[in-house]
Length: 295
Image (cartoon, rainbow, N blue to C red; front, side, top):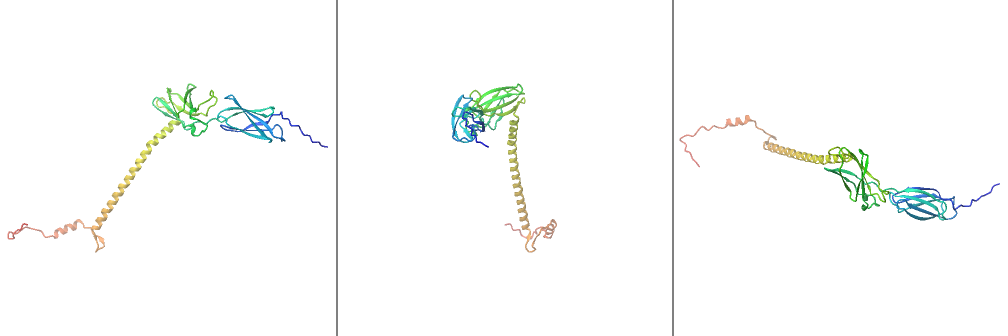
């Protein structure tokens, strides 16, 4: 014998398996299952989002008959901290979890330029790749002295550069630049870090120095190579012109000694020239009997 038993749904049970599917900078996708399998009617859920930084609450209503429910929480803040509570609309038992949204990215192309008595930090504007970042928020700069094992807050700026002075010789520093922290330093952007080795006199960050040296070498090598190419080009032109001039001179010389009767060029030697001089009659003088006519 068998008997069919239908359990009475208990609407006081909490949603099951609440978890985050995906989180971004301004949104979070959460998923949960109904308190019991195969609901036979629409179920109204209350999703409460508590901002742990700002101390504010928002409540969203979600209606679904599915056993598995997926919901996207929007208009969150990058780098924020939230407490999410899901329960049925009749204020039954709740399921909860914490969510941290993705912070703003670190500034790109952070580099150091060394001056006489200070250094300059440069970076690209974060607004170029972060639509949620406003330049008015600015950046904050920190410095870590590895020799003294001390981290110092240097200040903030709305520009894309920052001047650092009073560095000590022989110390190694690490500089970080990030979107300025809000709400008492609880909501910050990802930091961009750069090492700087103070080498007594000039001092340069290892990566920045390599980049600077590479740029300096390129600035010297490229003009030199260009000048060499120009000089080679001029040399080839001069050699070509001389070759053409010699070729034309030889052709003219050969044409002037060409005999159309013989079909070849005739060149006389020095001996031939001497023989012609010997065959010419020699003038010995004038006779007194011959009158001289002067024109």
